[in-house]
Amino acid sequence: MSIKDYLSVGEFFTYFFRKKDPNRPTNSSLKAMHAVNKISMLMFLICLCVILYRYFIR
Image 1: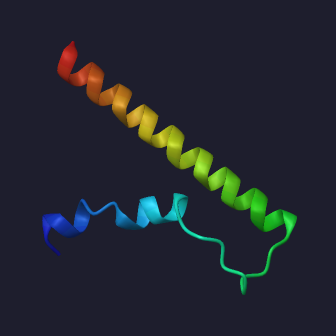
Image 2: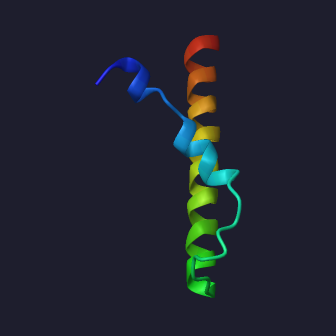
């Protein structure tokens, strides 16, 4: 694998900005799972930005 493959974020952004699939089953457990996944990914990105900020600025 090349570095381009490791740094691709296409799948990450399609997770947040995709259209609803009418054929996919929906229930409250599945919705809750996806909500928790989105929150955890956002928290990871925020923490990564803070760590990089502290590393380069301080």
